[in-house]
Amino acid sequence: MVWSADGPHEKQLGVPDDDVTLRPAPPRDGLLRFAGGSRGSSFKVALFADLHFGENALYWDQAISPTRARNISWASLFGNHDDARFEWPIDWFSSSGIPQILCPSANAFDGDKCTFKGTTRLELTRNEMIRNSLSHTGFGPRALWPSVSNYVLTVVSPKNDHKSAVMLMYFLDSGGGSYPGIISTVQAEWFHNKSQEVNPDSSIPEVVFWHIPSKAYKEVAKKAASGQTQCVGSMFQETVASQDAEMGMMKLLKKRPSVKAIFVGHNHGLDWCCPYEKMWLCYARHTGYGGYGTWPRGARILEIIDEPFSLKSWIRMENGSLHSEVVLAA
Ligand SMILES: [Zn+2]
Image (tube, rainbow, N blue to C red; front, side):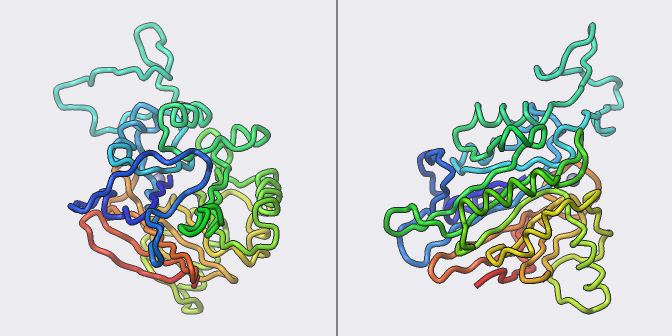
């Protein structure tokens, strides 16, 4: 999952701070705007990964409520848990006996029992888009369904007409849950065509988000273990759990000089960034309270500066501390 924030909002996302600025809801035109119009202002993205909101739309509403309350826009990206079958977490069972059954409307009642069949990717996306004017999430082209959340957003310059692109952010559904854990050939084709359309000469810097790491993450972790690559962040808490197969997406990205970094989640114990070919491969950080592992929670922050362009990143922990700062492009 990715939440994007226009302007200096990092402090508003889960970290206590007095300096909160609320602004009107942004227009839904796929353009993300810097907060200030002055030189030196920055655009920040807080990447909240592996929220594990209960694999159900009912809890997704709760998960996004702090952002909505602060009027910060966001975009979502689907992963393997989002449309998986709902499972009762064991700690929901109180010692006093059976918990009360609450059947979310998306799930069918079967007699007096709720089936907890989970919510499909399309239903989750539709629910988010209809109910939230702050959401920039896209369905993606129909031809790619049920793989959803394949879309691109543009961060535009604070200067002049507020139309010139500073950076492009691509979102891809890496499958999992009810769907194979891959980025398919048709998704790679979609990316190829889309990037040719919006950035034909590769003049605009680009970053890419998806959930399950590609096999290149495995390669790079191996190199780091043998000292051949210098990385930042937590490297060896667990092994890389990569996509089931490579269908051409990484080949395309390697060829595009404008691609600066890829960001994934999925491995809760990893939050590294490593150089790979001419780009960076980065993990987010486990943000949610569901899912495996007891590592402290945090979020990856990206800071984009216009003119001269730079892209910096670090991890902000839940307790407010920062670590693993890295310059991904300058
Ligand atoms: Zn997870």
